[in-house]
Structures are given as structure tokens and as C-alpha cells.
Length: 325
Ligand code: HEC
Ligand code: HEC
Ligand code: HEC
Ligand code: HEC
Ligand code: HEC
Ligand code: HEC
Ligand code: HEC
Image 1 (spheres, rainbow, N blue to C red):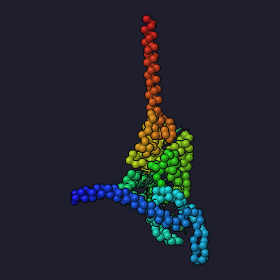
Image 2 (image 1 turned 60 degrees about the vertical axis):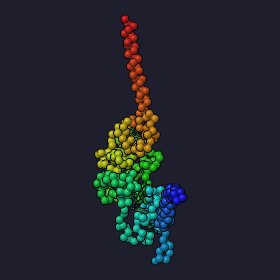
Image 3 (image 1 turned 90 degrees about the vertical axis):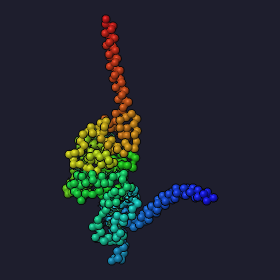
Image 4 (image 1 turned 90 degrees about the horizontal axis):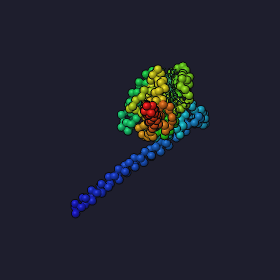
């Protein structure tokens, strides 16, 4: 009797464990949902002023509501914010709680901002991104070595809009556009460029005039394809090199072992091994890169035809020798 009870108890426990696990997972995600909802509600207080070009506040001196202009650089679009990687955050997770009062205390301007690595460094959950290696590469890049402290990760990863693209967006063309806009936000925008350095920035269109059909190239490759050193350990190389080391050679991409396979198409190469006889089949799904997309069957077929013709000529020659006699 006792044994039977014990057995039943054991079975019950065994059944309950997975149920309990499910419950834990479910309640954790429910908790997160709840937190996101609360944060969203809180953020409305900030968006009340920060989401458009004008804002209103109550001025006690004048005893009335006043409407004023918001500087464009201080405007944050909720749509973009809630699509970013940090969509679940409340503004004051990164900014001081004291921003909740207006006018904002002046000393808050000096507040020190977190760095990516403060939150993501040596964290198992984000191991796939290799933050530590990315930081190391970035520190060796031309931007960082020339402008150390002034140039930080936020310069390229906008705090309120940055979202991953290379590993999540389906269309290669969209990834290219997204990534290139990051570079162009300075290299085609003097205001942001001048945050780092005085003077004018070189015109990208004239400095890349040597590329045939440049517009097409800029739609089909990223700036980083030519300007970073390939690193097989991370998905997006961050070591931007001096201009003298940039890829200049057409064959680096227009060849069977295309450089593009190790950079732009890296994620696809890992994900899909689709190969319908074409070399670099993954590229072919998106575009046709002269030289990089030779077809293996066609190659073999032309070789076959070549050998057959040689044999036919040989046979002909031998037959002629025999019949001459
Ligand atoms: C009543 C309007 C209003 C509200 C509400 C408001 N802000 Fe601001 N905020 C401004 C204005 C205007 C500026 C431009 C600089 C200034 O006037 O202080 C600004 C500037 C900032 C800056 C830029 C740094 C600085 O000090 O200049 C940050 C960061 C900021 N706000 C965060 C927040 C956060 C976070 C919230 C919500 C907790 C918030 N703001 C709510 C109007 C507002
Ligand atoms: C993941 C962290 C993070 C979150 C979340 C965040 N911010 Fe920021 N914010 C920053 C950083 C970092 C900067 C400084 C950007 C720089 O130096 O380029 C900044 C700058 C600003 C500025 C100054 C203008 C600018 O873009 O440089 C304003 C205004 C601002 N934040 C408002 C907000 C509001 C409002 C929210 C919530 C809707 C918010 N922030 C959420 C990190 C964050
Ligand atoms: C204040 C801490 C904090 C800072 C600073 C911060 N992050 Fe995050 N980041 C997080 C958290 C927490 C999440 C998870 C958000 C969620 O899913 O709810 C996240 C999400 C991400 C993701 C998406 C991860 C995924 O698998 O969905 C990426 C990529 C990312 N952060 C990159 C960056 C980069 C790059 C920087 C610096 C420019 C940065 N983060 C700064 C805390 C931070
Ligand atoms: C010169 C511009 C630039 C700077 C500076 C920069 N990044 Fe990036 N980073 C990019 C671009 C472009 C991407 C590609 C975005 C995409 O398509 O997902 C990227 C992607 C990433 C990713 C996602 C990689 C993946 O595997 O999906 C992480 C994480 C990241 N950067 C972290 C950092 C950190 C940390 C720093 C500072 C130490 C930094 N970045 C500085 C341009 C930059
Ligand atoms: C096909 C390869 C390739 C692509 C794609 C490419 N570049 Fe370049 N880039 C080069 C080469 C090579 C040079 C050096 C040119 C020279 O010295 O004459 C260069 C030079 C530069 C310079 C230095 C200009 C100067 O004269 O000071 C900048 C800045 C630059 N590129 C930014 C970009 C940006 C931003 C993009 C993306 C929109 C991009 N490049 C796309 C190969 C490329
Ligand atoms: C925040 C602004 C900013 C962003 C974003 C930015 N750059 Fe730059 N970049 C600069 C500045 C400023 C210089 C000039 C540095 C110097 O000569 O002191 C520079 C220089 C360069 C150079 C020329 C180096 C040389 O030898 O003269 C290249 C190449 C370059 N950037 C590529 C890129 C690429 C690729 C991206 C995107 C992944 C990018 N940059 C994003 C500001 C930026
Ligand atoms: C970073 C890789 C890369 C480099 C370097 C590169 N190309 Fe390309 N090239 C491409 C890609 C990707 C395409 C677009 C294929 C498509 O149409 O989808 C392309 C397209 C072309 C085209 C077809 C243009 C058209 O009008 O249809 C020509 C011609 C070409 N490249 C020549 C060159 C020459 C010449 C050089 C050297 C000066 C060069 N490429 C360097 C990647 C590269």
C-alpha cells in the first residue's frame, strides 16, 4: 500500500515538473509583457514633448501654457524607438530619473552615458554577438585611433533607433541600405561629421568615381565590404581601416572565391547551403556578380564539349592517315 502511494507520488511529481517549468516560462514572459506595457506608459511622459517639433509646458511666471520649438536633434520618433533593439526600455533606464521634471536640471547635460559593453560585456545571453571582440576591433579602427574618446559606439548605433539588420532582415538590399546609411550619416552629412572633426568631409561620390556604375555598386555592396578587414569570428567586421587599405581590386569580388562570401553573404552562407550547381549560390539568390557566379554544370559541360571536339579532330586525323594508304 505504502509502496503504491509512493509510486503514485513519484509519477505525479514527474508530471508536475514540466508543468511547473512551463508555468515559470509563461510567467516570465508575462512579466516581461507587463514591464514593457508599464515602460511604454511611462515613456509617454517624455514623448509628450520629444516626439514632435513643438512642445507645450506650463509657465508659472506667466501663469499660462506656452508652446515652444523642439530642436530637431532632440526629436525621437516612437515608431522607430519601438522597433529598435532597446524597445523594451523606459527612457530613464539609460537617462537620469531627474529628467522627469521640466525644465530639465542643467547639470544633467553632463551625465555620463552607459557604454554598450557596460550592459552586454561578458554576458552569456549576448555571446553570439561577440561584443568583446567587436569592441577590440572598434578600438583598432581608424575612427577610434584618431579620435579616441569622442568617437564611441553610439556614433554609429543611434541610441533610439538602432536595430539589428544583418542577422534578421530578409532582403540583402535592405541590409545594405540600412548599414550604408549609418556611414553616410556622417560621410554625407557635414553636421554630424563636424561633431567629430572640423572642416569639410570628402565627397563620397567623387572619391569613389573609379567604380564603374557607382550607384549600382553602392546599392549592392556595403561600405564595410571594402573598408573593414574580414574577421571570421564576428558577423559584422568593425575594423575600419585607413583608406589606403580599402579594397580597390575588382577581382576581390568579381571572382569565384568572392570576398563577398566572407562578408556580406556570411550569414546566408551559414544559414543556407543552397547550391543549384552555381558557385556561390547564395549570392545568386540576390544578384548576379560577374565572375562570382559561374555555373559548375556549365563549366563541366563546356569542358566536355571541348574534349569531344579534340577527340573528333584526332579521329578524323587518324582516319585520314589510314585512308591515305
Ligand atoms: C515639457 C517638455 C519635456 C518633457 C516632458 C521632457 N523633455 Fe526632455 N527636453 C525638453 C527640451 C525642450 C529639451 C532641450 C534642452 C532643454 O531645453 O533643456 C530636452 C532635452 C532632453 C535631453 C537632452 C540633454 C539635455 O539635457 O539637453 C534628454 C536626454 C531628455 N530631454 C530626456 C528626457 C526624458 C528621459 C524625459 C522623460 C522622463 C523628458 N526628457 C521629458 C523637453 C521635455
Ligand atoms: C539604450 C539607452 C537609451 C535609451 C533607452 C534612451 N536613450 Fe536617450 N540617449 C542615450 C544616449 C547614449 C544618448 C547620447 C547619444 C550620443 O551621444 O550620440 C542619448 C541622447 C538623448 C537625447 C539628446 C539628443 C540626442 O539624440 O543625442 C534625448 C533628447 C534623449 N536621449 C531622449 C530619450 C528619450 C525621450 C528616451 C525614451 C523614449 C530615451 N532617450 C531612451 C541612450 C538612451
Ligand atoms: C543599459 C544597458 C544597455 C546598454 C547601454 C545597451 N544595451 Fe543593448 N540591450 C540591453 C538589454 C537589456 C537588451 C534586451 C532588450 C529586450 O529584448 O527586452 C538589449 C538588446 C540589444 C540587442 C538585441 C539582442 C537580441 O538578441 O535581441 C542588441 C544587438 C544590442 N542590445 C546592442 C547594443 C549596442 C550596440 C549598444 C551600444 C551602442 C547597446 N546595446 C547598449 C541592454 C543595454
Ligand atoms: C563606424 C560605425 C560603427 C561603429 C563605431 C560601431 N558599429 Fe557596431 N555595427 C555597425 C554596422 C554598420 C553594423 C551592422 C548592422 C546590421 O546590419 O545589423 C553593426 C553591427 C553591430 C552589432 C550586431 C552584430 C551582429 O552580429 O548582428 C553589434 C553587437 C555591434 N555592432 C556592437 C558595436 C559596439 C559594441 C561598438 C563599440 C565598441 C560598435 N558596434 C561600434 C557600425 C558600427
Ligand atoms: C568597392 C569598394 C568600396 C566601397 C563599396 C566603398 N569604398 Fe570608400 N573607398 C574605397 C577605396 C579603394 C578608397 C581609397 C580611394 C583613394 O584613395 O583614391 C576609398 C576611400 C574612402 C574614403 C576616404 C576619402 C578621402 O579621400 O578622404 C571614405 C571616407 C570612404 N571611402 C567612405 C566610404 C563610404 C561611406 C562608403 C559607403 C557608402 C564607401 N566608402 C564604399 C573603396 C570602397
Ligand atoms: C560619427 C561620424 C562618422 C560615422 C558614423 C562614420 N565615420 Fe568614417 N570618418 C569620420 C571622420 C570624422 C573621419 C576622419 C578622421 C580623420 O581623418 O581624422 C572618418 C574617416 C573615415 C575613413 C577614411 C580614413 C582615412 O584613411 O582617411 C574611412 C574609410 C571611413 N571613415 C569609413 C567609414 C565607414 C565604412 C563607416 C560606416 C561603417 C563610417 N566611416 C562611419 C566620421 C564618421
Ligand atoms: C566589394 C565588392 C566589389 C568590388 C570591389 C567591385 N565590384 Fe563590381 N559589382 C559588385 C556587385 C555586388 C555588383 C552588382 C551585381 C548586380 O547587378 O546585382 C557589381 C556590378 C558590377 C558591374 C555590372 C554593372 C552594370 O552596369 O550592370 C560591373 C561592370 C562591375 N561591377 C565592374 C567592377 C569593376 C571594374 C571593379 C573594380 C574597379 C569592381 N566592379 C569592383 C561588387 C564589387
